[in-house]
Image (cartoon, rainbow, N blue to C red; front, side, top):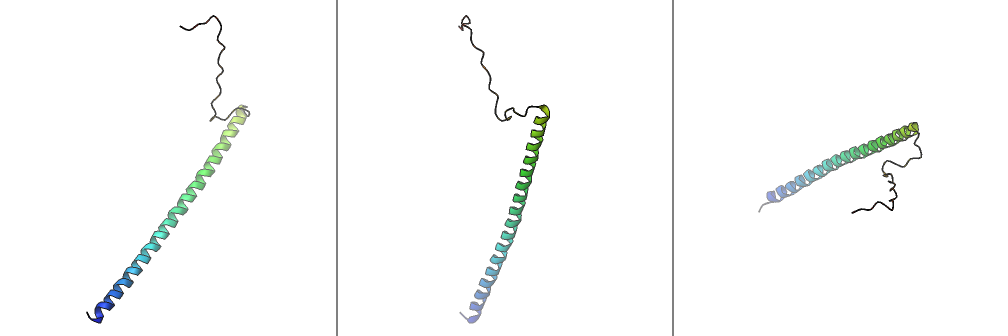
Length: 89
């Protein structure tokens, strides 16, 4: 084993280290870009939901049903009282 093999090994290790560091930096950059994009889309979705809620409230106000329950709450169905002469067989 001569000194040249040791130098080649050191150079190979340095090259591999530089390659891995570069790869990690690229991955971090791409991850940050994707993360920023996702956060932006979530913010946009929140804004659209706020606008939709405002539009729904405006429509309800126009219809004069301000005190009505939310559409997500089903209205209670009143059961008709059963008369004494109606029997089920």
